[in-house]
Length: 464
Ligand code: 5AD
Ligand code: SF4
View 1 (tube, rainbow, N blue to C red):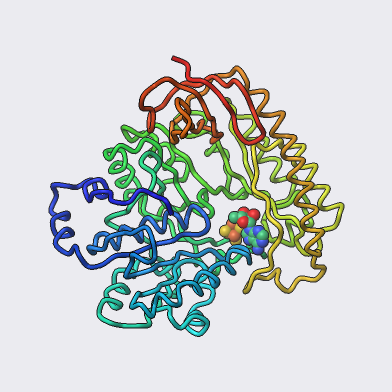
View 2: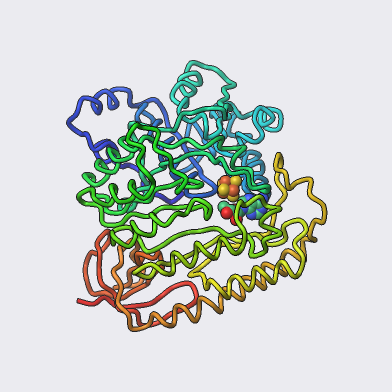
C-alpha cells in the first residue's frame, strides 16, 4: 500500500538487453492486479515475488482494488486478530466480484482455511498457500482460461518459491528468502502447518540473486527465514549458514547483510565468529525467547531452557564488537503463573534487549497449545503485556541515552516532509532522524552524530 508502482522491467530483472525481457513485454496488456499484504517480512517478500510472476505475465500493478481486474490478498494467521481481518476484508470485496473481478487469497489464512474459504466467501476464485507459490504461474493460467476455482494447498513439498522476476518495493534493501517453512514445532504456532516443512534454497542460486541485486544497485540484503539460521544448503557444496553470510558479504557492491529470524537452538558460535570477522554483517541478532520461564518454554516446546538461552546471549555479548539483540515475547501462555511472568521480566533485566516485540498469547487452530488447560483471562494478558512493555521502555530509555554524542553510519532510507530532515538505519537497526543540508541523500551512507534519544528512536545531525 502506498508503494511505488511503475518500475520498469529492466529495474526488475536487471536484464534489459537479454533475451528474456522482450518476450515479457509482448504479453503486456493482460490486465491489472491489486495486491494487498498483511503480516511478516516473509509475507512482504512473498508478495514481491507474486507481483514479479504477474508482471512477467504482462499484468500491471494498480493502487486500488477498484482499478484492478485481479484482486489478491496475501494473508497472515499468526494471531487470531490478523486472521479475522482477512474475512472482514473479503466481505468488502464481495461486491467487486459481481463487477467481474477475480479475487484470490494467498498466504497463511489460505493454507489454514483451505477450500472452506470458498464456502465462507464464494466470491473467491483462488486459494493458494505459500508452499504452493511455485505453482502460481500455472494457477494463474487456469484462471485466465476461465477456471473459477483454483487451489494450491499442498504443504508436503520440497520446492522453494523462486521467480525469474521479483518486484522489489525497497530500492536499497532487498529481501531474499533462503529457507522456507519451519521444522520446529512450537506448540502455539501455525507456521509449520501453514508454511510447511523446512526447505532451504540452493546456495549458488542465493548467491546468483545477490550478485544480480548488487548489480542493480542494492547495497543491503536481508536474508529471510522463519528459522534463518537452520539453513541447510541442499547442494553438494553444503554451505553452512555462517559461510553463506560471509560469501554474501563478499559480493562486490554489498555493504550490509542482515538476517532474520534466528532460532536460539541453532545459533552456533560460528555465526558470531562470522559477524566478528566481517563488519558488513550487521550488528544485530533477532533471537526470539518467547518466555523467561523454563517451565513455560517446555510447554511451548521451544527446545531450550532459560539457562541455555542465556548462554547464547553471553556468546553474542562476548563478541569483539557490540551486537544488538532483539526478541519476541508471548505473555499469557496457558499455565503461565505470576512467578513465570516474573521470570520473563527478570530475563529482560538480565539481557537488556535493544528492543522487542511482545504479544498476548492467541490460541490458534491446529496447534497443540489449543487444548492446554489454565487459559489466562484476556484482562490478565493485557495487564502482563503492559507491565512488560513498560519495563522494556525503561530499558530502552537508558540504553538509547547512552548513545548521545556517538557517531554512527546510517543507510538513509527516508526523507521527512520537514525541510532538511532525513531518517536512516544504523547497522544495529535503530532508526535515527537527522538533520542535513544535503540536497539528496536517499540510498546513501552517511555519518550521523546522535544529539538526542527517545526509547524508540534517536535524533542526530550529519557529520560532514
Ligand atoms: N500467539 C501469540 N503470539 C504468537 N507468535 C506466534 N504464534 C503466536 C500465538 N499463537 C509470535 C511469536 C513469534 C512471532 C512472530 O509471533 O512471538 O516469534
Ligand atoms: Fe513458529 Fe516456532 Fe517455527 Fe518460529 S520456530 S515459526 S515460533 S514453530
